Length: 284
Image (cartoon, rainbow, N blue to C red; front, side, top):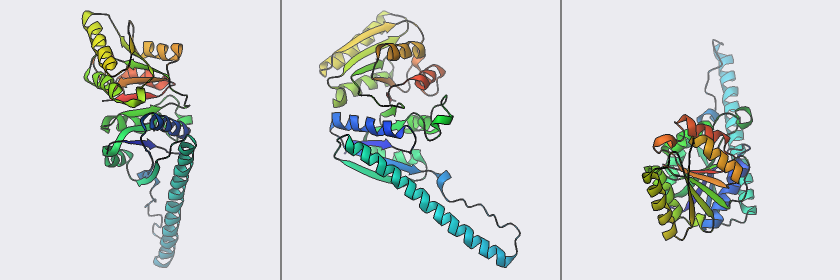
């Protein structure tokens, strides 16, 4: 059953926000939360041979000591992973979610998601990982890989979580933007939220019709949406709207056309993502 909210926690400063966002989605959709921590390959025991040309007896002793250290390190890494999951579970539990499971995975994070996403409603991940304080100008190294590979909507948590009441939807008429509107129309998460559809660019008969059609789809689902066409560059104008009007989240297609093309690959929207201080829901 495709109803779990998969939340990826790594112990970074974004993990608490990921937990609160997952709780928010769970409460609005009545879906269970699964918290996952992935022990990446870099955290696996180091297999480097440090014994060099040491004589046989000493070499054997050293290799035994190194093996013991490897085993101890692997145990500590696993204990840390379980502690991260326990902390995350406590946050989600305090938020009032009753159905919570945890899972410690080994290996590549994208492969781990591929194994569990068939049972997922959405995937929640922080914008940046454990090096967030040292790489404030960069998106997390795993974010692009996950957005490219995931077949489920990806919710990107901001550094701090705030309750969501208003939603800005970047709409360019492309396939992924249409998919985003369809997702909104079908998801109970958006019930009762204030939704604004915006196209950034030149107003034409086509852009106006695209917005009218999208608004009609949402209205048929019981969601009243405002529509706007705003001139300018998408990254700048979307950022201004989010900051200036206090939108609680942004929804957009990860891959579209025109100037909102390709969220992570394209430079304009990547810049907007770096500076956006609210959660972003991506659909591809």
